[in-house]
Length: 481
Image (cartoon, rainbow, N blue to C red; front, side, top):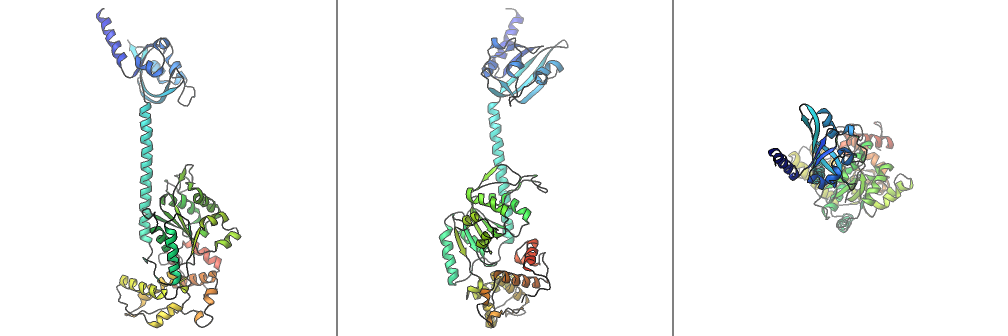
């Protein structure tokens, strides 16, 4: 054997030993050489491959099954442009049995004295690489989703810390309150939906927190949504989240409150204010634990305990078809009606004492005495705004008291002291709500929005307050009498 034959034999052994598949092609793209690795990967034998057009045999169709014209093939391109086509990706080679596998390949022209006489194609089966990439992509998506959720939870919790209720516990010893405590203890350890009913300011959020804190979900967040504090066009996004570009201003994906509450509890305050369209979507979450983000198509599953609250009569709303009957029965599994402050007797004295101590400490005052006359006035007032109104009145009184004796700056004695003691209980809620809103507006000098505005005190969105004022016929010249 001549030296040149020995060299050629050595080159052939090297090519046959390579782990990558190797094809040698002539100037017409027909196979002149195929190594064992290529035979193993494609299933085409050496005899079946030599002399055949490589593209027509194993590269004729794209991954989706659509035709791959040889004019567009990088392998053939190397035969025409004389350039090396490096690491072509996202393509497939076809096996003899009709199956395909993903490949990375390089097509290198063979040039002899300036003339292209063929090409060498080196390829590898990247099935495992693709699977690993897919797993890595999925893992990264899960990490990003988890990161987004953690960031959203942290943002929400920071907002909760900022806007948390001023009083830290539910104060009182009245029989009606003791009954509510018993109901809370009974239902807390279950996953049953709870509907908290009662007038504005009776502490529905505090009782929702108590239910959550006594439940097995207490290690996960209690997520609050005030259905009246958000513009109508943003409530759906707030509840279910949205995808980037789903509406004007949606510059990034946002996780909704239901996703934040996964594994925990969601508190839907003023549920009666939701539109019928949103009630349909909420019903699906209550029934199936599923929803889609606004502008999205992926179904998201959550495990959420729902506590809803309202000051409105949902049964009346159902009759008027303002509230879905099926949703009402889903939420009304365990209703708890919170008593108004005027029905809690001596609880008022306990709450007043607590508020006076807290606001005195906060404002650096030493108010040590609450005159009996003041306490009687507070106890006999009808409190249409309940605990929230009492809190505001005491805070203002502490601010304006100049010595260590609490002095009320407003005349609170209601007509019930001089007339029928039951008048306040017979008064419609709308009338009491109207009176309360007017009192708050007068206190803020009819300022609706802003930090010192009535909407902030009432914990409403300014637009919602304006809507309630219009509905109740409240104008600046309106008398609260």
